[in-house]
Length: 497
Image (cartoon, rainbow, N blue to C red):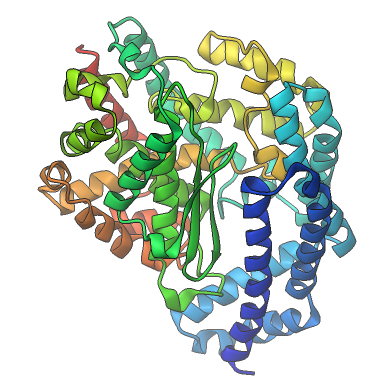
């Protein structure tokens, strides 16, 4: 058996993944509401086809043959890694009956459209039945996947390989000890004037600003596009097609601009993976945490940096001339206000991780049946009060704000926190290896840093586990110290203490 045969088979599966990605993009951007239920059935059908191909006897043959010691040892690093990833995914998927997976896929597809309606109507009871169905499947799947200590570990594994609930709790414990006192210190300091960011902002001008930012970042528009959606996302449709979405707020330009830069960071990662990895298990991000590190870097470490705005502010003022009367320094301080917020995707850099901790704790308890789906709004509101001192006035700005649960993506949220930590650690390394990085950014040279990311992280795709990749890039295991060093230095200056 030749390794080429395995890759040809994987390419056929990838074609189906591309089809379903295009359908999902359409369902979250362009589809008329009445078309969603029927389209969900199409998604379910293709998802089942992918599932059956991925668990077919042919894949069992590949797994058995290429894992033979003599054969495995004869493979190069790339081929071995693909065999490892294929084997792990095969064993996870083989644990799930195809008909059950199809029903789960249909529930998730319907769940996203029902979630959009429920959020718009502030109607959690409308969303509860399909969410209960999804959670039920996930609990079953976790048992079928298997785990050692915690049922939730089986779901985390799908997003963060080799990471457990215990690992995440360890990270949270160390982070909270330093982060919570720092947030309290900021709360007692005089903050910037955030009111200068409020006003009326035409959608067409916000779109123009977003496109300008993406061009400067180096996003390839010949290999993607920017569209509007309710909950921003990035999706790879296939080789040469990585699409971005954003959301426009008529009274606040921050969600669209920084949301676009965030999704642009995801897209740059996908566009930077070596093309020869396409249609193989290695041809994707190392993990969702590593993916988030790239998006959070562009959104925050660059997008909210003083150096970036020294360069970008004149272009910004061209699009929104009223800001010609406001200094860049005041604008920079305003976009870096730290305060408790209800909405995760609009949270500042310092408090953002608390939003993830809240979701992690709820998901872990929900999957382990310590709380019920019907209790989610109350549990959510109580935790918001505990962590932020504020309480949502309705479920649309509370438990219904994120799309992840509607799509069956439980175990995903911890990746956002890990991404923040990876981002700070990677960026600290880039600053050491590119001593004049700050000056380059100030001069509008973002290419140097983008190429550093591409060379150190992007091109490898999933060739390495995240734990191994961070050591390869930075020389040490993941630690929260770089994130705390970064926010302490930056916000101590902004809040002048």
